[in-house]
Length: 235
Image (cartoon, rainbow, N blue to C red; front, side, top):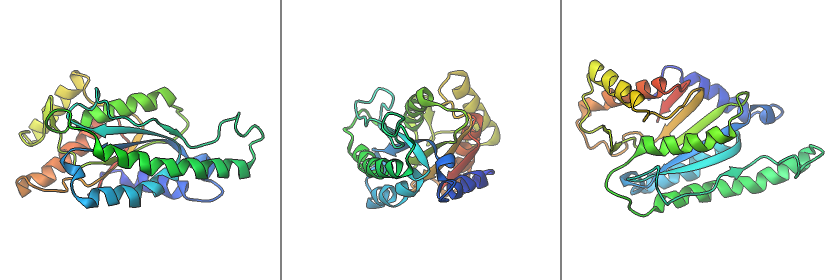
């Protein structure tokens, strides 16, 4: 399931994995991991193990956020990883030193993300947009407009907390538009201006009416677009 401008993300991934240009293409990144019902299948953990390393290869910095029942106030946190060497660590911009530091720091990313699957219960339900808001605040403090900003979300996107319960959402065109505008006015949409989003495990359990699946995809694509994202892949 792909958003209308998913090609932008694909180009970014190719650039990030290209040898000589990788340093220029690397950006500011974040990972959201859903510790609620999404975490139960082994497939979810294997997705992080298999897919996050490639994503992280295009990053110089990685932040983390957990989806819980109260994501923004959650006590389940992991500190960000500064993947690129600082000027103090590599004052002469030696590529060998840079690569050695990157290689070490990259080993920290997947273990931190996997720990978020085991967050304690913090109220019922899943607060996905709260986790995105928390992550964007972290990334905003590091923001560099000239760098790509990318977020990997490991979640089914079944947000059913606070002002957004997708299981009860009116998914008509007018209903989707109205709910997104309501979230925007209440400042509940994360500020994803210029961000590239990729979601792994979208609607993985598929427990609701199958007729709602494409409409839920439309809702999230429209919500990400309204929040300012330049691309969104729902995989």
